[in-house]
Image (cartoon, rainbow, N blue to C red):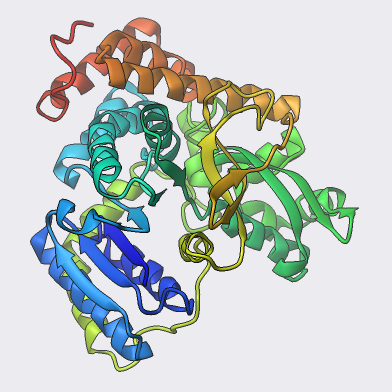
Length: 442
């Protein structure tokens, strides 16, 4: 009988989907599902939701819930982490302060000044979880869904011997989107995707051994609806020749090209694109709205006779867990240390590459070099993330400033002196939440 711990179970929709997927596997249907969250109210709702899933499928699973992860980590087989350190009142300043200086942020959970400060607050908690796992379940696999993915995973992979990999749905999500544009079944799409989280590239995109990129280029150039569906990513594809993961809104933050002037934001990041075109503070406004309505949504879901399908979804986690406890091997894109896997990205950086999960754990697959035109931005960003993590682990605020000074969007918008002033203000705003930084002088 497997034991699976969900830390951050108060991420209600995500926990619900992950548990549903877990229970679809015969080897996991009788698992002990341990839910952990420091928010007692959300934890209580999470327990009710998971219990409803168990009852709907008549599964022999056991559900327990606690605010103390140490009570349930012992002998766990897998630990899934979906935490958020700090309320909206805290992390909103990651977006509001840069905006004051001219750095216009769409989501701010992955990189740039907003992502870096989220990492600085979150890394200590992630490392505390690792220390507890080392003592209580050293053979378990940790599957991290928390952002900023690459920085958190890099910090953990540098400091623990645990098997840690980060999971994101942007790889398979984008591949499904491309299959739709190409009008081919997703199962017929053969791809290799590599890079860093939210900035990985489909270095191979084929069907039956035939390169699909010429056809994709023709579609993007000739179909205005598809062109407008992902304005930023399609512009990058037409310029660089390879398609990148994660939405246009996110990607507009990660480079020099789309958010440095109001006219460019209006052209590429406000309308005519998909679910997240890139307008300012998208995720902040979304969370503020969710804070008002989430209880109503949960109560409605619990009252519905059949609130969701019990069929497996698209997330990787359950398939990895199944492989880890002895089920069939499973190949996915995971975030792992670069041990020569991507030869023109920094050694030791957290890279997102194909990985095989089995009862032996996770084994990443060698990819080789990224195309040069993709490696420039990706390699710089990986180095920035490594600098930010080093600054966090050593309490070096100057190194954090230097990392943010090299961020493409920040550097395209501000001078070095302006960046220093902005970073200083962000440290001052976060001083209660960053006790590992002593006597910050910038």
